[in-house]
Length: 245
Image 1 (tube, rainbow, N blue to C red):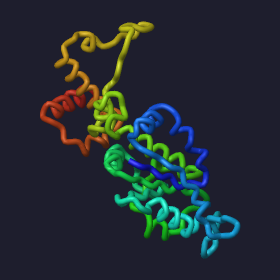
Image 2: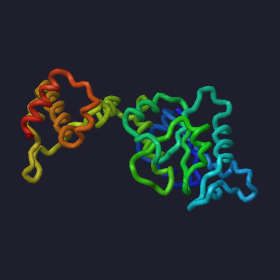
Image 3: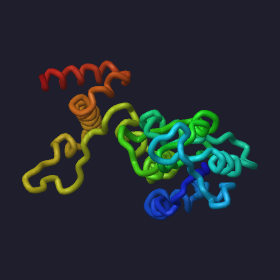
């Protein structure tokens, strides 16, 4: 995978790619990345990339020319059609399903906006996707793009040390993940559940499955509406509901 980030402030994003899993994945060749300052593509003699909105109003609007030209430049000589992602509070709310979808692509282009917004022609004629990471507004699209990129890269083959790690994350199976424990078995009077110390993997798997259902039921009931539960899971959920009536 190759990732292009169109941004006026590449320094905001640089650190993320030089540490932890993203750095290691890049060094192994799992993906490549490039920062593209779309101000470099402005045909304005002062390098302007924004202007006052037609019809009046507060703030400045990003003009289409620099962004269109930047996207065309980074897409040149690349066979695969890129996914062009516009970070926007008006976009679809991001989730793990979308992360898995984007992880199957060969070329992602992120457009990180600033100021009051984008010229609508960028949205209509250029972007293939609009993504929001939540119902709030940030100073710019860089922070949202970093969230999306991190969640996508960790799903690429062999990026995580254990390929099953991503499969068992919260939301990957539609449910929140079960609790985790590690040594010591007792800490400040708090004990690890006996089932995890039993060595009985069948019982452990059932406990984890039920705890995952319980955590989802208590914290995010809305997720259960979209999950196809097995007969065993349905029985577990009924037990949980009875326990918490």
